[in-house]
Image (cartoon, rainbow, N blue to C red):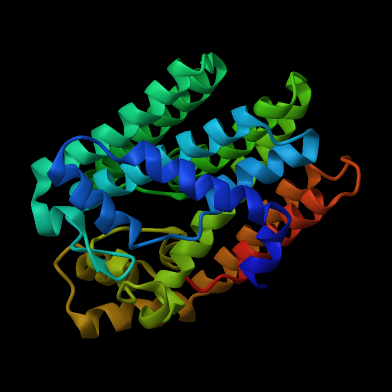
Length: 323
């Protein structure tokens, strides 16, 4: 599935979005503008603004408010990526050295704060108060998800229930926000916004499940990060959770010990083979498919349209993506 097929119905809107998004990122501080130029070189897929535009188009018309929503979520997304790199002590982002690796943690955190503030100010300036409520809830959830993950890692106590709470808050909350904001920008019908919100929540969980799978079966030249990064960082995701649950206790304890003691390359490949052997990959893929089917059910009753077709295609893209 080609992402260009999905965005073609909002291609013009995305071009205009790029121009407006760049304008909100610059400031009078020279250092900040240097960093902004650096970030813009690492252009992502723009899945989140695409979701905003498609959701708006599904339920009404794209308008100025929709552009504000798209800019807000992309600023928030950029801020969280920067902060995540600081929290995770990551040196790379999308194949480039991370901001914290180049300019240090203090500058990276402040830049992330700047982007978050710009998004909030944009909403206030345009009296988009519903947007503020929705995005504030997303920020709360993302923060709680990060802290729950840290708490669980310290206590070596993560099971499927906790794992899904973490990815729902850390990842799905923002995807859900994109779809809800898009709907809210185009209609006052709360039931419609509710459906798009839940479409995004289920899509977001599947998105993270696929991301976790790529850590075990991705191509580092495509993903931009080494295979086994989660293992190296001691993160326990669903493929490993399932494999550990379905293996003899002695072998499971051995794998846990490897993960908690700065695993070397050979250890990482041992864990990957272990997860594959005990069904972790197949199980996670099946769960991702289930969540995508749930997502589709929330938009099944909408009239057929190019926007609906693109959203359905996006669910397939999530399952098939390689980066």
